[in-house]
Amino acid sequence: MDSYRAKGFVFRPVVTGRRNGRRHRRRGSFYWAQYRDHTGETVRRSLRLPNGQGITDKAVAESELRRVLDLEQRRAAGMENAFIEAASTPVRLVLARYIRHLRGLRRSRVHIRKSLARIKWLVEHAEIERLAHLQSDKIATGLDTLAGKDLAPKTINDYRAAVFGFCRWLVEVAKLLESNPVAPVPARQRRGDVRKVRRALRPDEARTLLGVAPKRAMFYRVQMLSGLRVGELRALQWRDVDLDSDRPAIIPRAETTKSKRSDPIPLQTELADALRQMRPAFAQPTDRIFRTVPTLTTFKADLARAGIPVADDQGRTLDRHALRTTFVTWLSSEAKADLRTAQRLARHTDPRLTLGSYTDVRLLDHHGAINRLPSLDPERDHSRARATGTHGRAEDLVVLPVVPSAATSGREPSHTVATPPSHSGAQVHKETAVAANSHALAEPPNTGGGGNRTPVP
Image (cartoon, rainbow, N blue to C red):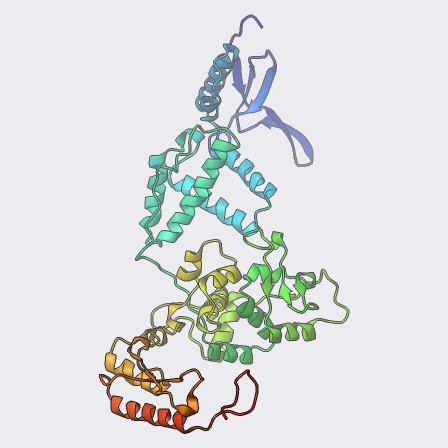
């Protein structure tokens, strides 16, 4: 089109309803706008505030219409800028698209629910209504508000991670932001300020727990001996367990695991036998192994019946995920597995996670490891060598030749070994060596047996 004239008006449309059984017409409460866009088409749409609410004030409605007409003029003049146009888009509208994106990626319902709640909380308390308001200082202000509630640094970092993922999607996928405003905002330092630490169960505590909860014993047992998470156990089916091979294992489906990988987990022989006995004869491959999963309340009630405190003297707590901590800790404390094996069975990509968060160091045998170090005390080391018959050094040994006689002429001279006089008890060893020499000289010649030796006449 040759020229474009920005023109439009606001109005309240007529709505139809019923009153006392009769049809009734009245003006609506919210304003709409009618205008011509840059292509010449007539547009009629409702006007809304950035928070999604309708506009009931005429002056506010006219201001919003002027903003829309200015945008249409820039489009008609070829001055369109995607970032500038998107700056006025309400965050709540774009957030709905982001949630659909997460569902398309098959993220879990828990992940989507937590991400949405955290983003909405931060957007509301940081007073972010439009995309133009997504700025580093506002996001930092929202995180500072969380810190003022005495929340743990990990919790604050979880909120930051949720908004970071949302803004990264706006930059890379939606192309509505030029850069990620969360990137310059530093994460909170967690070292020295860990609010929740899980502990592992001791083997005797685990046996007691299984004894007081017979209906849930198999669930607890599988989790403590496989390290599966609660959600993975909930989705576990009989087709995921190989009980017929020589090496039974659990092979969870990739879509049911947190890492979206199908890593096999070897099964203890006793646990494999218990699962075989537990499997019904009519069980289908797609049947779930555990139809019900104990809740956190039920787990704490079982701990109370077993006399196991939920929190110990250091404030470390027990919950259902602590049974996974128990599995990883037992790999080191009971099975004596090396770090690479423990990391592989825990299905971790970072060994620091295996050692730092999932290993209860209080159950490790630190004193035993120290006592197995080599001794540096010479007296203690010498007495230990005498007890094992390995005292003395090879370089201190002396070879004493045997004096040949008529009885031994034509034969290779034999040798005997004795220790030098510098060692304690050297005289005894020397006498023993001389006696052995005399015995060798007095021994009659060998006149039979194998070999090519010729008897002496």
